Image (cartoon, helix red, strand yellow):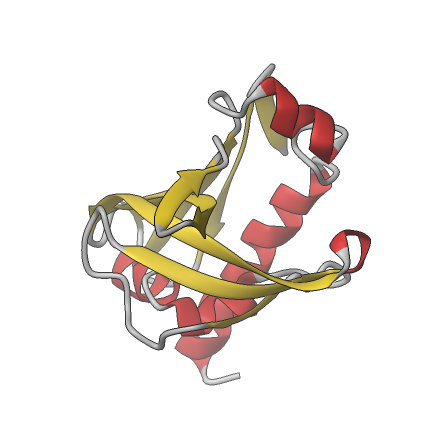
Length: 165
């Protein structure tokens, strides 16, 4: 179930994999495509294969969205990095050599539970400018069920790796 406020949505679910395994998927941009649910499939591949190692790091992802003209890239500033408990980033774009953040954040809180992990995925757009909100048409720019589908896809990815499926 998706819970939310006027400027934030979150969803929580149990993942049958240890926190370190879930964190490992999230800390490797090369695996982010594995967490992007169908039919969305916006995430393509990172421009650099390096794992995320610290807050303040910037990683760039190639993306695709038909309604914005197809291929684009997004530069993400890591805002929290506490293995294996918390990872978060704020998307933006580099223009004139400077990173301009869009005002929204993806955050994953991981809590050990039994032999698995209680994962909370939060999408917070509280710092998004009025102009960006207008440009996007709404915030978030996708239906609320996308968040549930995304965390479900993360679970499928992690659980498949654990069971070898």
